[in-house]
Image 1: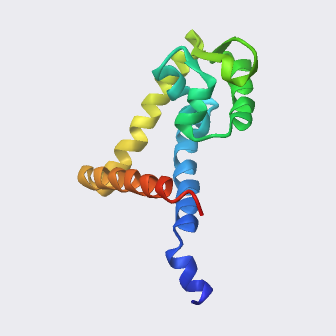
Image 2 (image 1 turned 30 degrees about the horizontal axis):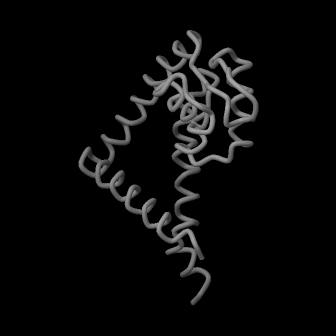
Image 3 (image 1 turned 180 degrees about the vertical axis):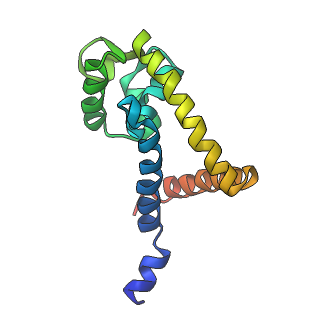
Length: 147
């Protein structure tokens, strides 16, 4: 098979390229708040289950705990989250601070505007189908992790 043909159908290549483009779109929306899309995702998970064990955030976002720990330090330094609990990453508990809740209120507004623009471009039904396709692709990757 020609490499150009591989590049056209490679799910990893296409997923990574799309992820970068989508991230840039959301990063732009969050820029005025001093956030990027990765930080927004982390704050969203923390805020949804406050207080949230760090290990749970790592699991939900499928992030390596050491990578997550670096971003957590930044968010804590900015005053967006509080970190409490025992020793090691698995014992840490995370919660949004009042300042974190305030920035997330603004960030969710920015997120809604981006979501609405995408839905306007694609249509609500297509957005729903894409989300379903993402879910199916995720399940397929889980089933095939052992190569």
